[in-house]
Length: 237
Length: 235
Image 1 (tube, chains in turn brown, purple):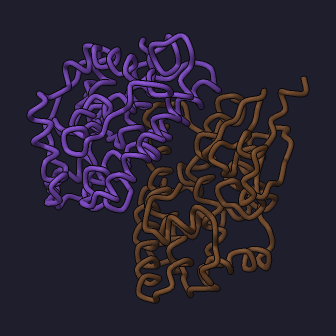
Image 2 (image 1 turned 90 degrees about the vertical axis):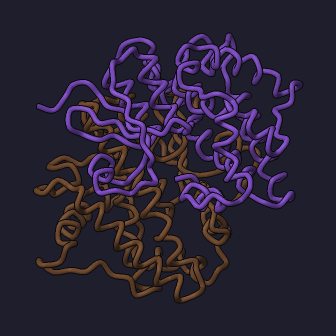
């Protein structure tokens, strides 16, 4: 049945959309990839995506948006290769740490790039490291993934941002401390494991492409809702 | 041995807290209620709620926090009726999307209109809140009286907790949801919601609610909530 194949509306550079792309690949779901320019808020696009944002999944004629909600939808509609565990507390734990990423890690990521004042950039770096450390301490000690030997929601929510950390290094000199003695050694072990996964490689662009696309954040010409929110100091959309 | 009986740590005046409280009441779960001041940042509190957030549910030695996450946890840990999320994956996504909408597009403006001290900012917050409410009402399914139609859900709790104290926003800022056109549905909906036993149990007396919001309205509240609300964020 043709309408049982979901349509995945995405933009190649968007880390939020990459989360859903990774989830689709991890689940082995057959889907249609549709590249959109989310800055062109055409009536057609807004009828698919009421907020005008990517990612959107359209399945059986109905739209699902918000990356975390898309991933939970995918997990529930196609139950094989589960992304979330079964037990209620384990599920809540994944959601709690996904929420931590949304509220405490994503904002300093953008602030570091968008803020013009060095002091604010430095604050963002400090904040990012502090919150990454909190997340690191919540990881399963053995791993290598967040919850253990299986990839799950938190891994997928964090991966696209972690693989863009080199952009933060390029433009702002940000680096997660390395070395076995570093408090981030568990994070670095996670990062190596996630970077090696097929789903990460297949959904990532080249370093040069990322460096190029993120330039507009650093020279303050970014027009996205995310950029606007960071400049105004309001919540991300 | 870690207890199977949950404990709810919450503040009497918090509509976020009411979300978790109402969810437990609706499910008929036996629980211990602990009145909490989340601004009292004691080491004991951080042992219970690692990010210091309320509401927080302690169950079987574990902590669950963030009001929306609490609602989903309660539905999954006690999967009896009423289900707070429906069975069908798309319907579940629908409830989550519109709960997210309430959290991002309505609640920040409810706080905004109270904490902002200039008329211009207040009017903008009021309009933004109405826009968010209009979208929610348009997404409401036919058949009523609930968001999903005949079935009560987390989407009703998400807005219905704040909606039940809109008299406070009216008192301080003249905010009213119009009783006409695209807003007509709101009034029938909130009346049905507030009449539920769980709402009647959690809602404090009007005067106490008004007193609780006064420092925010008068611009003297120093809480994290006030600071976040001024930036259009809610913690």
